[in-house]
Length: 124
Image 1 (tube, helix red, strand yellow):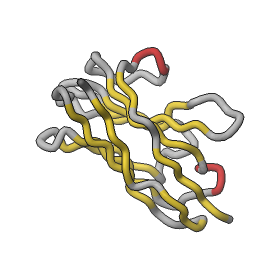
Image 2 (cartoon, one colour):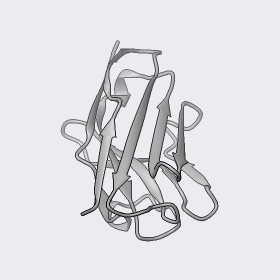
Image 3 (tube, one colour):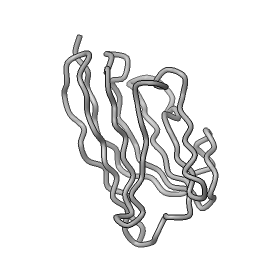
Image 4 (cartoon, helix red, strand yellow):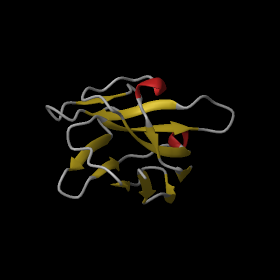
């Protein structure tokens, strides 16, 4: 059974940093796209960042580009999201996701596996 387990969320002041981790089990995702989405209260779940399985290319939503960095360790079957210069508007539940495909897309339907989410709260 495939599982994605996120960790690293929490409460941080504006301007601070957090590092999210997502450990996958049940299959290897080294050749597959992985990513992070987030969902704030009352809003749709949105794409935050993705990393391809073939080239390691990364993509980001405009609102986090330059502040967040996605990376992966295929030996550990783990993907990370380093979040710097956090803002109150980054407050959301962050979800790890993995696709059967190698390339990144920003649509939810592209991804087949989801974690249960980790809460990130940024205070002003």
